[in-house]
Length: 146
Image (cartoon, rainbow, N blue to C red; front, side):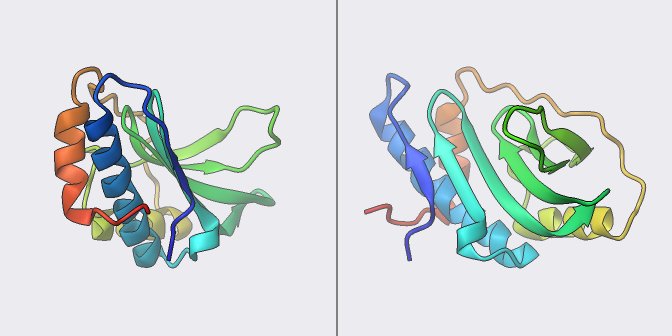
């Protein structure tokens, strides 16, 4: 099954972009399975930055929640807003790893959904020059994008 996503070669290393896309697709799939999000509720993109989206079934203040990932800030949970509005972040998954195990992300989501108090300090991971490292770390999740 093909997972919704976009991979475009915005960097000078097309092989890294392809490997990163394959790994991110599989990682998103593994996290989605962990948190119970169907394929149609997911998406990812590798362009000038790598990002992912998973639509969660829970609501916050009457609005849908989303689980989002970026290579710069890792995982966070935010309130879905109108396209012209900035998203409202509810919680960030802290720690020093932009690619935590899917089970760790699953516990993070469960804690937020259960109302556990979580910090909202946004991690800031070094992205410049680390695409090769990120692609290698995600390679164990790689899926065929063909």
